[in-house]
Image (cartoon, rainbow, N blue to C red; front, side, top):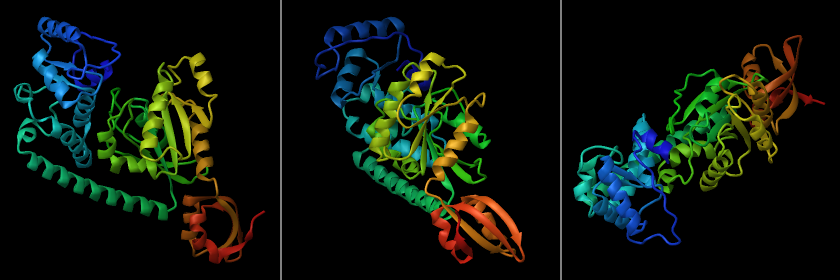
Length: 390
């Protein structure tokens, strides 16, 4: 929670914790703890209180009346960070939709505190927009949903074209700040923005990568996940997260240096299940091995499925990772023998992009080729087939 607060631009003055068998229906915390927090607010001059829990609209209003300052719960804090990070129209639309859906039932009864100037929890749509007639907000939500649906259609068309080109797609997923963007840069020789803060990437960024077989793949960097990621964000970012659900392979990137790496991986699994991508082929990639405790890392690699240790910073393990990606994307490829006329050089280029040439020799007016190809392009090379290899 401290890291979330820091990422949002807050300076943490003090921290309170309370264990309760049953949360208080009116304020979540007990009256004594609320009084203790009020005293701390007065002493430190704090202008916002952050809760690492989700508050009902009534609880938020009651707490603001008691504490006399703005109260921001976990969901609102994460939405605020997303609003800071969104760079493209797509990202801004998705964040605004999630914010409006979150704030709509919370407009009544928060006038005095909500009108306090600036600060965490009010970025994005803005105060005036949130205090206008509910019907206007609902119309804005409807418009945003329509715009995002158009984005989804555009992305589907892009994926269809990539599929026709038979280029494998690999989505990098993982807990926020696990080093996905750094890994994308290292694998693809790209220059994607990297920052040591939570949610540095909100908008998917795709880069081409040449695999050891000389085939090409498209690597896509995606929004980082977090424990208890708000459902409203998952829904609002559906167009972006579909890049994950439709990928041929997932690289689940985890920070090997973080003591809570196991919990972070589970948080990623939870989101993958929510977007129906839990059964996608995947490689678990433990990044930042250059700063990880080797004794802690070793048992992590013993789990089920393919698990690899790499360092995007030093390059350790990257050749082996690319080879494993190559192998996964080639699963199901067919081995064929072809006779391709010299003037059909485009066919050879297509095979190199979507397959692998194992052997090539010249025979008169043709090139004899033995290759592994994606079944999706079998119809393209059918006219040149001589016989099945092997």
